Image (cartoon, rainbow, N blue to C red; front, side, top):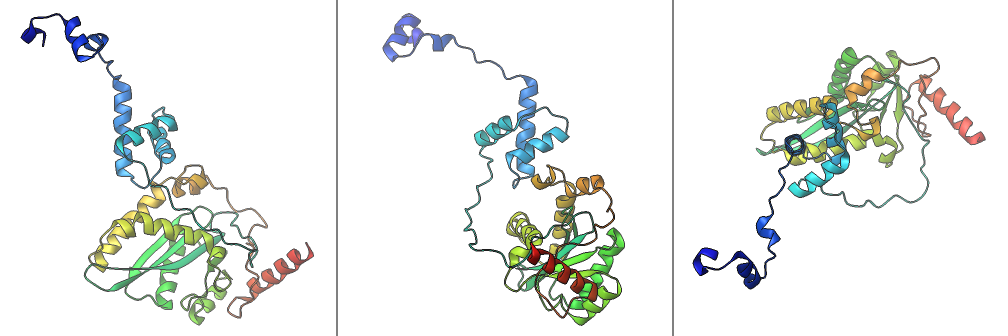
Length: 300
């Protein structure tokens, strides 16, 4: 405009209502280290779209970066990479019918459950999940059109061969879990059973929490065209869950890292607090533990 009107820059700024300092301002260049760090934040956020800023900050620290969670949060907001906040849940009112339960060491209590889904070509699939409640490790994710009690027993034997035998297994009262073949083999192997009360899934909270993460981070984000493809996808996600995904309940460690740091089982730590429900399907040792726990809590 100075060249076109043959006037000074002061006059042009006065006519346009622009402050003269804006014409002389030179933006500061972003330091190279900060730019590289912000690029790394964006890369990890796109690679792990379901993780929040605290977990992304933990991953950056593992890679050797000195970063605070506030910087990660700001960069993710500017790039529109925030994780949507979960909807508020309606808390269950009233007292629980079961005793509080907690695993005390690795291979103390395992939990298993089923999840249902379908393939794009048509046809439902059933998914069997098996986890360790203490380390949060996922020992098995198996998909098939139908899963019988014999299949569950075969998968359990494979998991025990890889990771060792648990002291107890917690589950609901599904027909696959209370089958006579399962009960007989568990009794012979001296593995106790902890069955939750009917209609009380909160008593099996660890595997229910795992199922929700599995559905949100895998099933809802993948289009499964066939059963064979689903098995490959589930195997990859299980490896990611055990070895890459940090858990806030484990101090932002992965289940595999936490399992390596876990102390071995000490004497007297082989009993987990079971459900109050008496069931004819449990073994003799498990029923004795239930009676002992019931009398203990009744006296309190």
